[in-house]
Image (cartoon, rainbow, N blue to C red; front, side, top):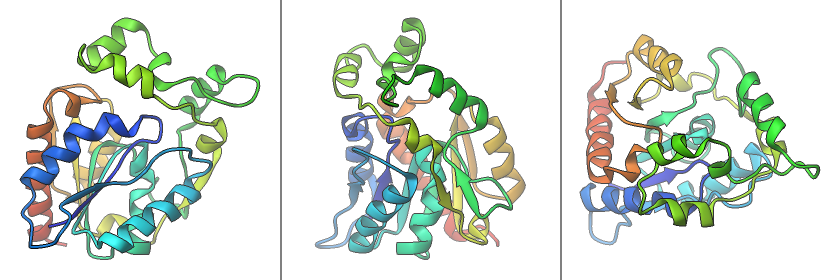
Length: 232
């Protein structure tokens, strides 16, 4: 099995090292296969640009599984449609494209306005680690990981959140599953349930994979297997 991990562009690649290693270690492989690859989230300008870049990665790897975290959930259906038809997509505490629309904004209106209030005069957002009260951040991120996350966290242009991406027709009927941490994405969990996707909710915060990467990887792979046999 080969896996492409689509990260949130609001976080650094280093945030996903543990999960990537756990997926690579747990995914069954064949000789010569690269078990897991992280798509580069750096320097996003628009969602369409990231879809193009990540689709190139998927075409090269031909993944069986696409794992999308957080904001990358908006982009994952387009990446699959362009470059990996037949792949299972597992959304991990992730946003989802709106049902019945041909284009998806990359932030709900309320969240976009919150982000806009943080942007500087050049339109750059502060690092994601500066968006939240310190106590909130310390509850989300293990103490030994937090200094590196703060050091590496990128500054993303507000224009990225203002961009839109294509929503493929029938994307929700393709093999798809959802792994939630707590109830932050309650609407997305409800949508997943209504679609009949394999669904699992675990206790934890939005970055639970920083705390328990092996368990998260195991949950993702279990959902992938269930997606292969789920009726459509």
